[in-house]
Each structure stands twice: as C-alpha cells, then as structure tokens.
Length: 347
Image (cartoon, one colour):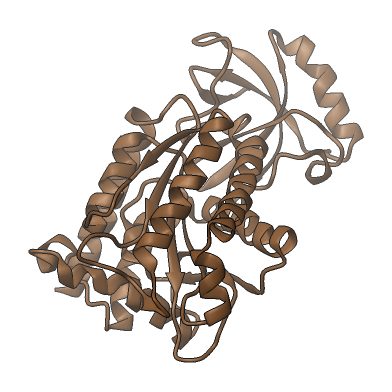
C-alpha cells in the first residue's frame, strides 16, 4: 500500500510540475505570502501573544514593502480566517508565483530564542521534527484531512518521506531563498542564528515553486515575544525579509527563466550563445561565480542548470563570446543555438 501511494505521488508530482511550469508562470515576479494559522487555529499562544495575529501583521507589512518595490503579492489570507493547508498551496499554485513564504512564530518549553528558516526535507533531528509536527497538526482542524493528505500522520516521522517528492525540483532555489532570508535576520537585525533547516512541513509539500517556512522567533521567550508583538519588531522583520526577497529576485529572476527555458527578447528566432557549464546546483548569477564573466543566463533542462554566456544573431558573432569564455578558463565551453525557448546543440 505504501509503495503504491509513493508511486502515485511521484506521478502526481511529475504531472503538476509540467502543468505549472508550462501554463501557469506569472510574467511578473510574484511572491505568495502565507500568514500561518488563523481563525479557529491560533497557533502558538504564550505570554498573551498570538501567533496567528503576529504572523498576519508581519505578512501584511512585508507585502506592502514588496509591492512598493514592484513585486506582485498574493496572500493566502489577509484577515483572521482559517485556511486549510492544501488550499494555501492551491492559492499559491493558481497565482503562478515564483516564491512561497509561510510566516510563523515558534514556541518551546525553555526560554529558547532566535529566528530560523525551513525548507522541505527530512528531519535532521528531533527538534526539527517537533517544529514540523506543531505546524502540521493544523490538519486535525480540517474536515476530511485523511483523504486530502494521503493519510499523512504528523506524529509519524516516516510519513515525511512522501512529502519530499513534489518539492525536489525546487529544493536548490528554496535553500538559496532561505539562506538570503536567514542572513538578513542575522546580519541586518543581529538576531540569534538558528540556521536554515529541513523538515517535513505539509504546507510546503504541494507548492509548485521554491518555498520557505519562516519562524520569526519564540513567543515563549518573554523578551522575544514582546519584540515580535511590537509594531517596530514586525516592521524590522518584514524589512529584513523584503530585502532578502528583492536580492533573490535581482540575483535570479531577471536572468532565470521558468523551467521551460529562457525568455528571449527575440521569440521564435534562433540566437547563438555559449554554454560554459552545467550543474545540478543553482548558483547566484554573479560574475564572481563565473570567473568574472557578466550577464550570465541559466536555463533548467531536466535536473541540470545550464549556464549560457553571450547572445548573438549568428554563429560567427558568437565566436567572440566563445573566445572570451575560454580565455576566462572555460576551455570546454561551446556554442549552442537557442530557439523557441530551447537549447539546440549544434553539429
């Protein structure tokens, strides 16, 4: 039974990835903001502070900052209502967004403090599992949750294996976005660094885009809870997240196409570029990552990111970029054609 379910999930993942990568990509950079909990689900409650209220207030502040910077914003909720976890993912996927951010607050039996970010993955330790278990337990407030979530049990560590399938294609970009956000908390706000972690969050499973769950801090810590409940604290956290999102957009989105390929200014016409490298990892498109070469583009084909340099109307013109690439150390680089959003290897 377990293996049949896993095969089904793999098939569903493949189908959904194709569907959203080909037909549901928003032309502008769009961030889906998911304020955790809401309505009948208060989330963590401690010292008089409510997670659902802090998450919503911080999310709305974050959204306003992003909109002021010409980034489209979609909310899974913008008031105090209860939204099923799977519906949050559905809202995100219908938007065709490029980044999903789920905003939460933490709780612990000790006076633990600090900010941490999560991407979907296997629990590295019991603490990560407990954080995910707390957030996933929301499904018990939903009708028909057993059918909606393929029998997922938040209390069973083995259930998380099935969660991994659908986000695998987006893991690299999710980790990068999480690192940008976490670095902002630490470097900009001097928050205690609780690192980027992986754990099995249902809300991240069904999104067909890079996705990050943010734990702003611990409401159970009196000092940190007061900070997160304050307007100033919420504004500072929103500012730090927004700065990270804008950096992520500028580093990747301008030169990173959807999974179908690069967006060319000359559609349906062939151009010639130099492929300098291919990797399973997505690198920031900065000159220091490419031996000083600027204006690098990247296209994902299968499980590889292919890095392209230059753009020319003819092969002869492209030879100048090929010489430049080889001079900078890319001896195995070669010229490719680029037509209808696809790389064509030349004979």
